[in-house]
Image (cartoon, rainbow, N blue to C red; front, top):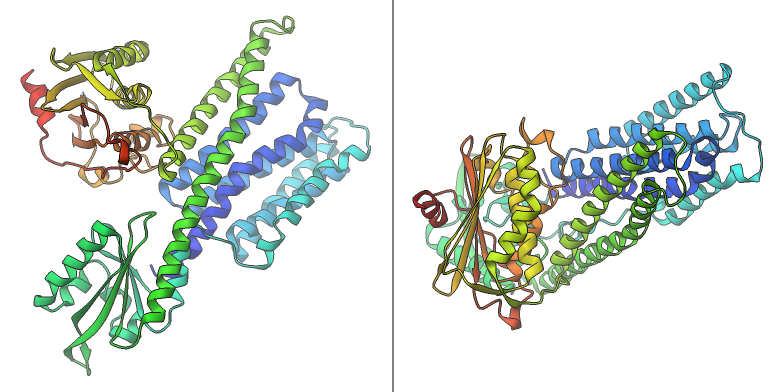
Length: 567
């Protein structure tokens, strides 16, 4: 996959994600007058929360799988159901509200930017309109008096189109791949993108002209294999210095390239290396030895702009999460009041059940929003901790008391094995408790009935090491590298039955990094998993409290695992 293909996919994913996050909220705000004509307040709130939950679940699925087509189809079906419900409550096709059905093909094209997306949206829109006309023909729709208020939703949707007018006429902004797009326009050099392990992920179209090699002959470790043997040490040293200092590196390397129809030759190239701080990906700018001062300046500007856009993305997520928490808290609070009868008793016992569903859905959505907010704060470096001395056993006991009911309900044994000399730990009590709760909660979730989860800890000099081990389903070696990434969940026949947004371990990874600690995972499929966390007893260094630590995944046997078996 080349750079431009990645850029186009990222743009489509970003547009669809924004539509799924904000679309149901805007529709709920504008459609309330129409729904209130037909439904009672509890049922109306249940419909709104269900729509939001379905949309956000689709976002999580898109983020974890990266598959655009199924998520786009799901979004189209959800949009059709939502708009059909609103139009039906407004009286049917005779109401001006029916005009918003045009949003189905419009938004389908806006997200996918393809003829196929427009055709799919038009087909679903026509089918939805036909269904509404059929219901009206059989007198199955409510008789709603007309009025100017019927124009509220069409006018509101038209306003959203006006607000997005710049994106209709120009290319949309992609925060994550802006640097890739700008580097691809540097037509006088080959641009290669490397992952954190040094493997080549993609190359621009100019690479074939500069190096004489098609893209597929540069991917993976192919470029390294073509380096002159004596230049490989120079290449690896430059990469190591780049990761250590973050400063741009320039080296002259001899690369074996094709010559003639069947021959090859060693040619000298100037290779400039720059690193994007957002995801630690490395860009190689390869050209023949000529004047390249302007090229380096453009590369630096492009990388810095990508970094600033990633910061803007994190701030945007934090702002949106803050705004979403207010209405969710209101939904939860008023639902509790209604259940307790503070506004009077319900006429039908089923209404109590409906309000309970609304409250539970609101609490689930609020936990997802809080997790997204924590992740965005950690990624942007604005998450602050307040270290203080406390007894680690107290944090473990707090976690055990919170999750004992969950473990008992699944018939999973929750055990504690803490050495007596563990003593005090200097750290943020709330962050350490959240780390324990997330790890133990995950262990209980993925441990079958009759299994066991163990929390252990001991001292290692000036460090405290604790671990959470289980006898659950385990994790395959090929999936270990994905653990800890936001919105990523390991998929198998067991995990798909459990809900979650894939944020728990990502938050744990960030909190451990803020404490200058390390986290490692050892797992065997079918036998269980052990997650080990090592923290400095004296607390994180105040001068570098907000710097993260690299997350290490250990495929072998860990010290904590050995201690657990001997305990």
